[in-house]
Image (cartoon, rainbow, N blue to C red):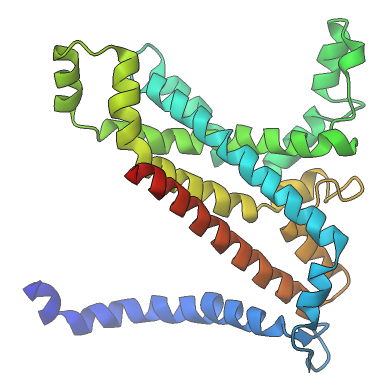
Length: 292
């Protein structure tokens, strides 16, 4: 602490340039964007203050509510898909089993790929005409199971969610692996001495000690799902018939397709409020379960 106090001027001088750049290019645009949510502005003309008019339009727009439902669907699919799969794989691969290092790398690789690349890859795989999924089904005599995976409104959202889980579960696997490795060996050894089996150690020791990490993973799932854009934009563009429209793609279309910058800013503010609310609710529920 004495060293920090003696060098506080140098510390501030070192941090100031980075903080200044962050403020100019990140914080200031965010604040300005929220302010423009109360204006009618096309990006070129003089902004006209309209108060809460943009928000009234949002709340009465059926496409927005469809995008909201789709976002919630992705949030739930991600929480109950990515987190459990990542946790199960982390528990398995934390053992000294043959090839564990290879599988850790293999499961994490999709997370390292560009989301645009993943979207293009799976758009080809799921293509109803030349996609490998339908080709395999036809080759093994299951033509009746072939589907228009991205063109059918009933299947498009499920297909998108499956790709999201495939890409991201390895990220949570690594998080849980790190948390498991931080569990003191003495606790597990004491459980072995007491005759606890693997299942009891998992349910009574490992999972309770991982609960704070699970809470963090859920928050990351919510924030990531509410920001989903590029994968959907590449694979479906929000179609067919708004079946995969998300709030982010809705905002993009309103802002950059028809130049309603004020309205798009209002949508971004609504997305931020909803995301923050979901995170607060989830942490409250999970903290209550932890205390119980």
